[in-house]
Figure 1 (cartoon, one colour):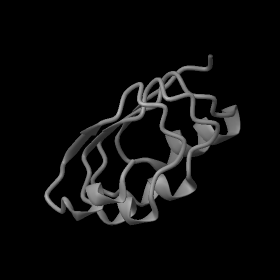
Figure 2 (figure 1 turned 45 degrees about the vertical axis):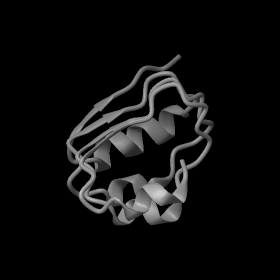
Figure 3 (figure 1 turned 180 degrees about the vertical axis):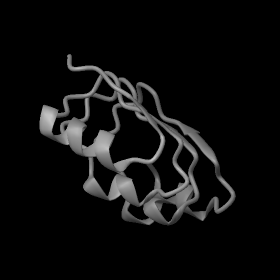
Figure 4 (figure 1 turned 180 degrees about the horizontal axis):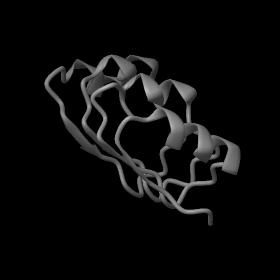
Length: 87
């Protein structure tokens, strides 16, 4: 994800499905994102800071390589709906 996306302060929805994303820039956590799709990126891990996105009401993470422990943490700590599968 290019860091320029962090300058889009009014950004509410970001669909990054199947873009081979490996990481999320640190500045991303300052945004007021409500919908985030990271599906199909084959990410090896998800940053714990994702829970800092307090306005997040939908997180799509199907098609990544997260562990059960990571998925449990996300499910317990993200306020919105989390869509995932254990591939």
